[in-house]
Image (cartoon, rainbow, N blue to C red; front, side, top):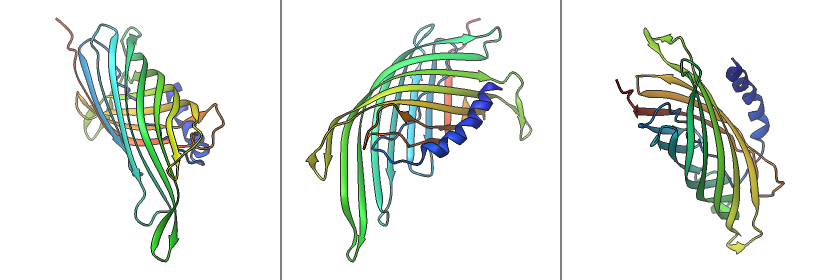
Amino acid sequence: MQLRAIQLLSFVLLLVATGCSSLYMPNVPATPMFKRQGEAYLAAHANLKGNISANAGVAFGKHMALIANGAYINRGNSRSNELFKQHLVEGGLGYFSTIGQQKLQVLEVYGGYGIGRSKAVDRRAQVTGMEPVETREMEFDKIFVQVNYSSTRQKKLILLGKKRELSYGTAIRASRVAMRDFTINDLPSQKEEAFFIEPLFYTRLGLTNYLHLQYTNGFNFNVVDNQYLKAGNAVFTLGLTYKFGGKVKK
């Protein structure tokens, strides 16, 4: 019930968070919900704004796991006043454990590093077409710490005549993002560094024993006052997750 209340609250916060533009777009973090050694996890998420994220992970130890994330966004078209592109990759190492007698809750803690590149172009309509007014480009690196908590509903949901597993989860990620190179109209500019807090909430519906549909929403805010590397971009995606392996030994 607490997770549901938090998810509803996030919608209100999203309205506040989406009022700004930034050179950094948060990706969908890995939320594998590992319960035992040998499990593997794949996921893909997308939204109508062209934000695509992918995740992978493997539980290589009794309580240890590796994760990898990637994201790509290409927003805007030939008539848009603003164009934005970004790609990033990151990886991490972490700890996972089940909670409760029935093992329906999962706690995961990860730390990792990533790199990426962003480009934003402001344009104005001219007689000859859309002409760039300002172009901002940056290369950045990222260090993050992430805590996931998820819970699976004990009673399965009956949908379309079948019983389906339903899970709720939240991930809170603290990320230090720093510009390694930054130019405005191809001229070197003052670099910025940000410290983002990124709460994210998701609901996962079982389609089969291994394949799940996941709805994700979240936002970010920055504890540093920046001009270009700032908060404001929300995560709002629909995706598929696939987890397999890790069979219980008889």
